[in-house]
Image 1 (cartoon, helix red, strand yellow):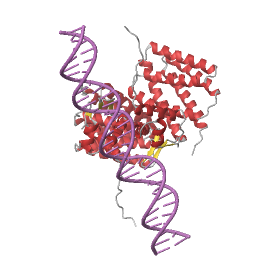
Image 2 (tube, rainbow over the protein chains, first blue to last red):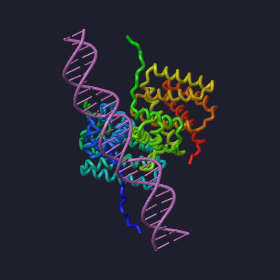
Image 3 (cartoon, helix red, strand yellow):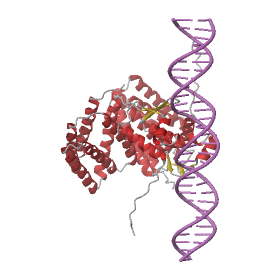
Image 4 (cartoon, rainbow over the protein chains, first blue to last red):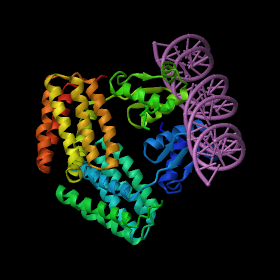
Length: 222
Length: 222
DNA sequence: ACTTTATCAATTGTCTACAATATACAAACT
DNA sequence: AGTTTGTATATTGTAGACAATTGATAAAGT
């Protein structure tokens, strides 16, 4: 008596528009500075302006777009300072999350982390750019999950979004990727040994190096 | 040639509605669980539903209200766990802000902090409940300003909002207030001496004690 | 030439009407 | 009696029309 039919999700047009626009921004398809005219968007997505407007208000409060009254909405520009702040915040949040995860994480969750890291290293070795990125996100999301702190998870969500956007906008050398994948190995080792200090060191180094690599070749697009 | 006329602010109805509703929630006038019907709100504020809806979408992404599709919007309920997380996050953010403020703060900013604290202690001595709260907020906002970190300031904004809401909902013993005012004295002393470790201790103790006082007599209103 | 004012086009802001959905409750069926 | 099905009502979701505002450009005045 369990046919296991797939849930039919009835997403409102607002939410579909929101997801579409956010995805376009985070993937770099919509570039910083790009003008988002409500009428254009509504025509492109084949809907009226009302749900588009509500989606834009949400994107605005997420900090992804900027609206000037009676003038228009644009994708928010990112300065080098923004990126430095972003990675500083990442270290702060993730380090805290890691400390809590060491105390509150369950054995199966550590095993899950291990599985992610293994897959990430394999993906890095075969040069699968997209897979490494996806698994890296999985790893850090899982870490947040383990920390059992919904408020921080919400804030992490914001930070992770912008990190994704930055990563999409910068053209990374693929050689960095296998290295970044391998960074997770000693980090996870230290975590499994419940060595908070050492794990913190690796985490900070990992994030900071990723941030520096990006800030380095960030061209102010102004 | 400077008549110094007051700026006429042309705030959109959406923003006025947003400010009004947010203020009502943060001041405790609109209580957690309270239903916010779009039609009612639009009638009460004398505007149409469109700007109300946009305001509600923003409040939703700020985490102040919750919307269930086709069912309605309500003021978000606060559990005891929420409050504990809130004060945990406050310690994390403010401690980081303080560290940065010690490095980046200007002399006049430290003087400003001192002025705030002096006024706060005086207000506490004469039992001026509202003034202590306002000055306490000023102090922590000024600290954020000094840390020169706009992303953290944005996150602080979220945390500070919810702190304000919680403070409005709990019935505090006024005796606590003068004590809380005086907590700022040794903290600021340590900061002026650039003693990061000691300032961090006072800060954590200050916030944690405030959080505990509140979590203590938090009645789950469910 | 320069300043000021008028006009225009583009865009967002707001309103009203209508459609879609969810919940509760009544009615029909077994 | 209990379960299912239909219906009513309240509420949110969406659409399209109109109003308000801005910035640029042209016209008028000095």
